[in-house]
Image 1 (cartoon, one colour):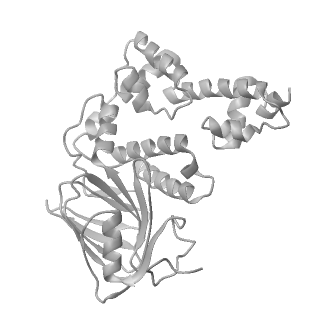
Image 2: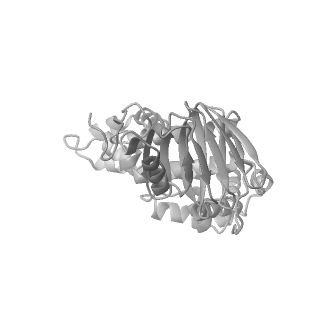
Image 3: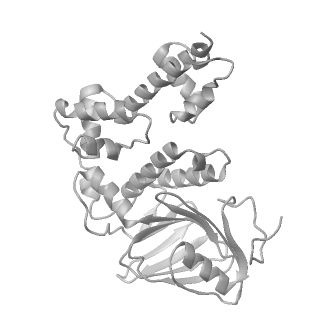
Length: 335
């Protein structure tokens, strides 16, 4: 396998996001320039000029997601990000970080991470064995998402506590979901080619981040939501029917009903006994069944129809289909 252009290190297919190599280098200057292009301008120093940095990264509609390692005791000094939140999820090794408000945090592989907020200057020291998945999320995306969850506009920086505990239920789900996102983006035929599923997963990651990290909106976010009157569901249900072929999210459905995401969930549970996405899944299952009934078994593939409507896990799809219609999708197609 040949080295990347301008690189001195061959790309390793075993690293995360190996399909999206940015740079592998032993040059401190090249490493700094690459991370600046992908994330933000910063100062980078190391005990010697020789490092073994690898950066893989991909940017899509919302996120930049990257894998980074330096293989040396690197020190990064970063100015306020201003327009983005950076979420550093340490996979191996450790880092030691401080920021201008006096906050300090230590990350450890699989158990601790940090959140860099837009208005703080940060210094992060890497152990030689440290490896991280790093999310870059635009302020507007995360704050609008939080506003949808709460049902009101958010104008302030979400002031996350510096450290991020990845051993809690919410924290471990956040780590697993980001690892799953990286794996699927890396996989040919995975989420990189499925915008419907990718947007749902990105929204889920932002929700998990907001629940996993402590900030000034945490209490509002975790307080019980009051359901709305059942009549307010009518425009939401109509919107679902008309836009079932689009990558609908709870945030978009809440806006259609002029309510918060939390109120949307509470109202669906009270009125229909299920979540909005469960109801949407039933709509899409009905559409899949109609397509299979019209399909020609010689040319129509169940998998193709299922994936087109957002059903990525075929065994789970077959089970959900059978529970709803009393037969397997292939039986519907043959009949």
